[in-house]
Amino acid sequence: MSGPPNPPRPAPLIKTRKIERRVVLAVLVTAVIPLVAALLMARAMVARVSATAFQPEFGAHLDRALGVYADLAKTIKQGMRYEADAIAMRPELSRVAKAGEGERVAAELAREFAAHPSLVSLKIEDASGALLGKHERERPVDPAAERTLLVRRPLGEASEDEGPFLVATFAAPNARFAEMESAQEFVQAYHQIERHHREEYVDRTYTRAFGLLFGLLILLAALAGIVVARPVTRRIAELAAATRPVAAGDLTVRVAVTGDDEVGDLGRAFNRMLEELDESRARVEFLRRMSEWQKMARHLAHEIKNPLTPIQLAVQECHRRYAGDDPDYRRIVQTTLEVVEEEVGTLRRLVGEFSSFARLPRADLAPVDLGSFLREQRDHFSARTEGGRTFDEEALLSKVDLRFDVPEGSMPAVLDREMLHRVLTNVVQNAAQALRDARKRAGKSEGSWGRVVVAARAVGGSYVVDVDDDGPGISAEVRDVLFDPYVTTKRDGTGLGLTIVKKIVVDHGGTIEATTSPLGGARFRIRLPRADSAEARAAVERSLAADEEEARSS
Image (tube, rainbow, N blue to C red; front, side):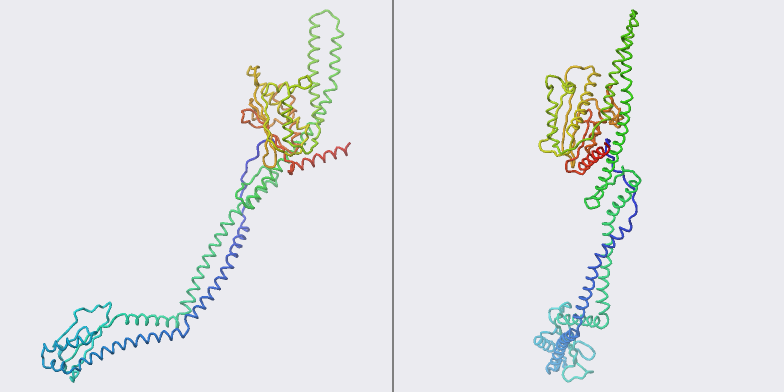
């Protein structure tokens, strides 16, 4: 109970697949419900849009628009053919061509070329294909911007076999023909989708896309569920594993607390519960051992006290009755009397300590301001004399630089003022005695023995009172048994003072431990619960129950 708290000990992990699966399933269900609703809505929207987009009226309008483009192209081509026919029927051009007048043919071609802007070239050929005349425009044909049409017609009244022939090449803007071809391809694709691939191209494509998205989101939801569930289930597994050694009686196990969520709060509560159980068990064990030691002290006091008086009287009677004149023997009798009386005095003092320890009363707890109480103790210790005589404790403390560091303000607690005064006096005296003995061992008798500082502060749900000194400190091997009965490091000590101190502190629902002081010496840390804490209420209930039991037994 007085030792340092046990560090957290990792508990073996156990599998919690059921919890993990349930968490993942909950995440999946939470994700699937809106996904299914979204998928059904998307399918309905795609079907509605598809039905709207592929109505028969749309195809008819597209066909009519394509027909307009085709008629336009046909008209353009037909107009070019009409122009070629008009040129071929010119009598003058036919006459000069048949007469073989080359210059006149070229002049007539140039005249016709000027009358028809869409011409690219005009040629006159005979039946064998020989060129009789030719006229071309200066700018060559641009295939990217123009579409050409070649028309071959017999001149005048010539037959199809005799000639001569007119070869006219016309050019029209390519944009109209490109638009017509593009519209034709679009209409063909539309009709193909409408007739054969509407369900496969639209419905199945979008269904597959949504299905792929659905599966991907399900996978992501499962991964997210695992990521979320795995830390929680791992910490729950640690808690579950920690309960096994606790059920076997091991209260030193602790779980590592991580996170700021409910599981983390559960882990902190679990560790706090084990600490309280460990302290409660240590308190019960200490009180049980104290009860046994008190019974033994009562028995020892009775057994030692009874023969002391007869022994002392017998030695005194021997000393008184000796009437001889042997100086050596008289010296032996005198020395024996002095030794017996000194040792009987020591035994009587020891019997007094035993009796005081055996009759140690229980703490009568009442609401008290701990801060005011400590300030009163500061004033008490600062007074060196009272009523013209020097108190032993004040004579001891007169060589010590004793300081109190108590915060202003209220520190409500439940205390027994007289018994807590005894605790503080005993601990401060122990510190002063340790400083005195250290000075004596060092061969220094002058000046101050050292410093003793009493400091109080509030920490969480309790108050901490530290008594520090700059003496030699307490060795580690003694520190573990320091509060056991009859353990002392002083030559003239009974080993009951610190045991009584711990008993009183435990009755107050607190703890006391011995550690190393920042001043270099020993530190006695007393932890007392606040007035409104569960520990304080439990201490008051134990005190009342003990009083009732004592009243019934008497």
